[in-house]
Image 1 (cartoon, rainbow, N blue to C red):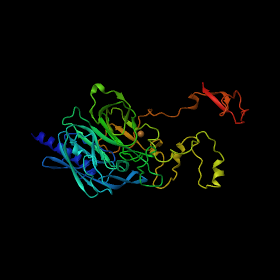
Image 2: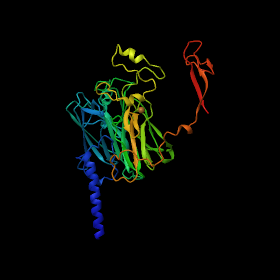
Image 3: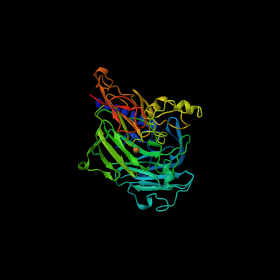
Image 4: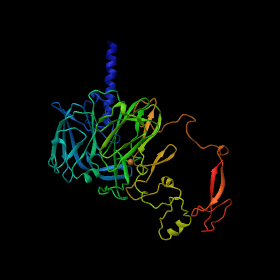
Length: 450
Ligand SMILES: [Cu+2]
């Protein structure tokens, strides 16, 4: 009996610690330790608190203009919910009756659509079609029973282009009544893209295609929080998108399975291993894997401009162009002129050059081996052995002899020059150096390795 009480005390203390850790993010959250599911973690975000009123779970969303930090050094004028973009994650359980109060503190009418949630038509939140607009200062109540589980979303359905272009979206996650298997770490990442003119702070929602800021939960790397997991944890990552573009999200180090869409669970017989999952606008996808290999593993969008920040997308292509002497000459006219891009953009990541105000460098992030040279839709899955908390554990310490490194020159394969050719006239080639008989350019050595 004594042992029982000791165990009871330990469980009580542990559950309180868990509750306290959670309370740091969210002081209003109630009954945390009694939840019948693993709470979702919204990196850089939070979960919406609720109150039980006569068997109904009551939530309160406030649509409002906010100041939002994309990454240290850049704050934008966004629109969001409860001070955040994406808005706080709504979590509930299949069978719950939910009442969601929506207060409009935006300067124009709005409505909130429960995207993918199966609701009666009048609760669908389409301004003008299924309800009156929520005028500035008004509060509307939505109430419905949850008849499904899965990763759903909510977003503004009034002046969508502007309101969603400025950040009015969030997750609506419905846990199953009974889980098939326990998830140890359950993450939710909302994708979005923005256009913020360098040197300004208000995203331009009229832009259709040429975006310059790409975000996970409205944060760009290096401002994205890492996903910390213990070796052996079963990890779920839920990804949502109500933006303009599709994003192929790629995880390093693992094969995962896509286990659910916004329409429900994918039957096991239809799941297959993959390393990249594409999430189109209007979709959610859940991926799952067991984190059995420790390390710092990149998780990013695989479109090449999407793990990058503003600037550099629109510059002239200078790769391979000899700019020697140009800089000095142009500086007579433009004192701050810099010749760059000749050998690629890496040099930019190491210069720490001062861009326009409130504008992130195109790529950055200091890693344990130098600049990571990334931005935008990029974060790090940190898998660790023997950790006792999910605080950021710092960089991975690689076991001795397991990191790729430079080898002795004498061991490296030697390049052998076979011919010299003109960059402008590939038909010109000879076995010795010289200049092109057609244009006079210095011939370049073409080599193959031995
Ligand atoms: Cu992308």
